[in-house]
Length: 59
Image 1 (cartoon, rainbow, N blue to C red):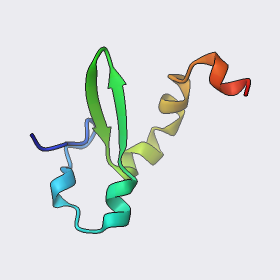
Image 2 (cartoon, rainbow, N blue to C red):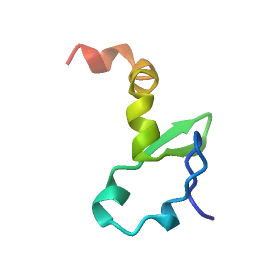
Image 3 (cartoon, rainbow, N blue to C red):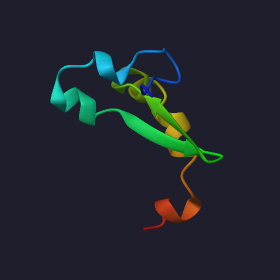
């Protein structure tokens, strides 16, 4: 199965730069893995931070 950005549809298999591959974000929601490409992850960083548990911020 090809990993695809949940926001824009870009595929990880289309990326040739190893550093860019590392910048992809995987999130797990209701037992399902979803990927965000670096551009979509940057654009939606507040949404990602909002999903972190409260304990994360008190460390």
